[in-house]
Length: 127
Image (cartoon, one colour):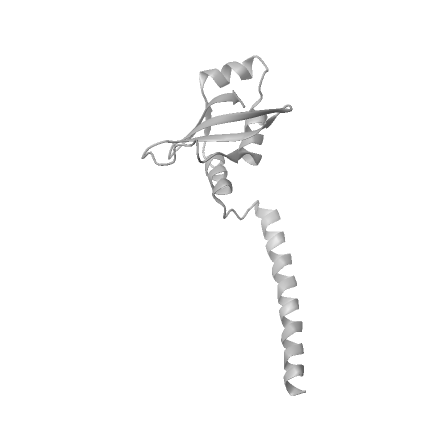
C-alpha cells in the first residue's frame, strides 16, 4: 500500500506540473509571438521571414498592376511548403528556395533567394 500511495502522489504532482507548464508556455508564446520550429520547412520559412524582403522587377510589376499584393507573398512565406528537391540549398552565398502555395485559388510557386542579410522574392510561377 505504501508504494501505491507514493505512486499516487507522484502522478498528482506530475499532472499539476504538466498543466502548469502547458499554461505557461502557451501564454509566453502568445505574448512574445514565439513559435517552436523544429522541422526544416518551418525553420526555412521563419529564416526568410526574419530578414528584410525585397522584390525583383517582375514581382514589382505584378504588384503595381494589382495582380499581386505584398500580403500574398507574406501568406506564402507563412503557410507555404518548401520544395527542397528543386531548391538549391548547397550554395555558399545565397540559397534559392521554391515555395509552393495557393494564391486566389491557384497553385503557385514562389522562387526566393535567401542571402545571409536579406531575402529576394524573384518570381512567381504557375504550377
